[in-house]
Amino acid sequence: MDPKNSSINNDKNKTSKANVLVTAAGGIVAQGIIKSLKLADASNRSPIKYRIVATDASPQAAGLYRCDTGILIPPASSPNYIDSLINIAKDQNIQAIYVGSDEELVPIGKTKERIENETGAKVLTSSLEVLVTARDKWKTFEFLNENNLPCPASLLPEDEDDDKKERFIQEFGLPVIVKPREGYGSKHFYVVNNKDEMNYAISKIQEIGWNPILQEYLGKEGDNADDNNDDSDTTEFTSGVTIDKSGKYVMSSISIRKIIKGGQTYKAFIDNFESIRRSAEEVALKLRASGAINIQAKLQGNKPKIFEINPRFSATCPMRSAAGINEPDIVFRNAVLGEDIKVDIYQKLMCMRYWNEVYVQHSTYEKTLNTGKVENNNNDVRFH
Image 1 (cartoon, helix red, strand yellow):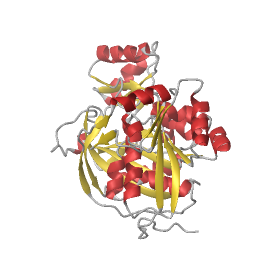
Image 2: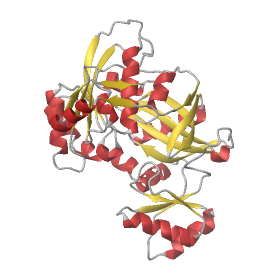
Image 3: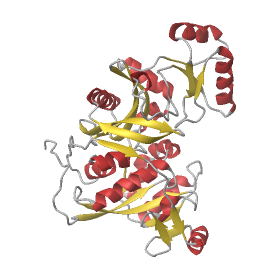
Image 4: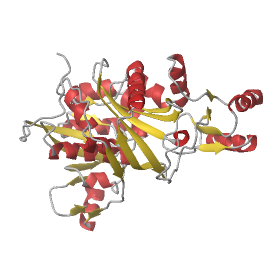
């Protein structure tokens, strides 16, 4: 069947219900997924009514109290994590699992087949090969370089070979980016302006047991509170792409020009940005991703240079959902219901984030501590 435009469904009565699980409910990625699923429930764009089960290792995770059911689970580093996830999925009759944190991607990816076989739930991630490539910034560089996709020059700084680092600086100049191969967000991200700063950054990353990588500086990254800064030398984009379950075609793509504060997007502009979107689509297809993938790039002249790939839903997915591209809903309907979806129309928006709160009765919190579970069918939880 050819892909059809499924962006509008005029039947306001939801035709079926789905039990879905969102992990790491205290994090910004999971909360974005939850918001998007709730937006799908409130709109007439999806025929599905979602019942959302949230999990987290902490009883202080806000997302536990914003879903239909919240359940405490061991951290991803625990040997009991996967068994606990499987038991919850079976007990709650879960049809799909959304991974809400970077730490859980590889552990779940390694056991994806087992989870699906034992629970019947679809794990909404790409293959383990894609996860491993995208989670490792050196493997990401190798993939992009081998496929002639524009990306910043990169180098593994071997301690005993100062000549390599010297040649790198001579060729690409200062400043240079130093960051962990396996990191995420802005953790241990350094912009260094001389060799002493470079060696310090490398040592700090190694101290925590991670492996550093040097990258060509593409202009200012990290915090940028200048809302009116349109200089292409400092313009950063994040693109959300969804690929169908067979990996053959793009179901949706949407790009955001973002303004960053505290390592997160706090203001953003959604527009066509066609060259950015097409570049991200090419990356996702060549990587053989499936489901949702998030690709970050900086504009150098007229060409985007890709500096990071996140093989998961993005924290900015609710912004995209508000614009008309609801990635969690699209991926569920394709992976679980088998719909062939193509959504290529969305609104242009200016997005502004602000703090929000969740209020929980102390008795409800104590009950969560004691039972490891919260059922949000009462008035003990309030949020705005």
